[in-house]
Length: 183
Length: 293
Image (cartoon, helix red, strand yellow):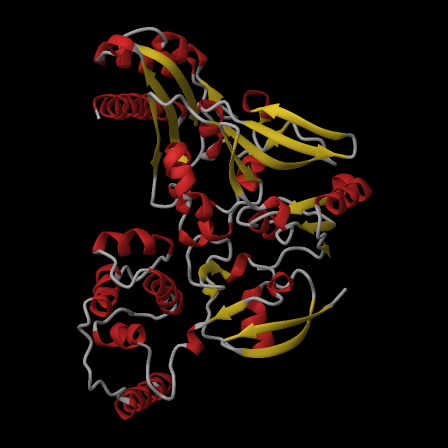
């Protein structure tokens, strides 16, 4: 039987009718449409689905949505403010913290939970903390560098997200795809 | 991936939870932190028709000091144990075990009671409650009872709890003030369950002789074990490297580990022996440091 529930995600309220077996992960992605949070292993090992609930990083794939009534949920979509990226997002771009990108939202949310609590962790503390977030491209050192760049205040102050350049790259991929198809 | 359909019940008190358990018996499961139960439900290893979520019962979440004991509500999360000054001060081994569980995501949600009741043969808390002679306070419609740690685990994933009974509190007596303890585990990869783990609390009397000792191990059998043979070997003696080696041999001979993806039985026996020897040496070192400080 569906239950009426109100979720507070990135300071916005969402009223939903959900089955009790709906996980927070699916509620975020499929009911609310915030698809930044990813499903990886779905059994709480890989960290791809990490979100922050009441200040603590948790696996949204193991959290029942109906159990989240009244809790403050933060997802990757809540980080950028007024078109400006969160320092961690910027660092991941500047320092190559992601490759395929599927683990990235989880990595960034886990790192944010750490830095919110301890803004000056050591490298070892970051490694230990981030051990619950797997990267199958194995870009761990770039991820570590990205987090440490925020810790040591090494991100560019005048960073501009190169939107036009990104779009050009995506378009070139589309061209490549259409060529591949005709061949 | 989804769990099968279930009815979600959220009692707000212990007595309400017990009434629900009584009503639904074997068809119901209590949901604590959900870090093992939810994966099991997704994989259809567990398929409860009723899921009783007890995370909002605040009477189950506390850490307090009382009459020479630390009392922890069963729904105390691993991270709360890890961060508790009181526990770090009084039973540091318990802090170490909590920090060694899974990853940050698991420790933020998983609970002390959930971990104990799950009774995973490779779980971390089992060895600790056995080494410290902790007691499990349980409530059922028939009233309250206290189960000593040594009687709590009955088989892999099985405890002495009845189907309508709830573990509400874990009671840790303060270890002797002249003693020190450690929990060590060997993992295959970061955040995994233990291949082998050892919890050792050693007290030193006059002339550096071992005056009190508690040893619990995980990975020796289908349930965590109180290593009675090792305890009686060390009790009353000066702990030398030779005696530590002897303890390692003893535990290895008596162990019957489960073969699984974490290793063969013969590998796990050796791993257990190594981790126990390390734990004895470390807790001895800490006890000596305490004595000379």
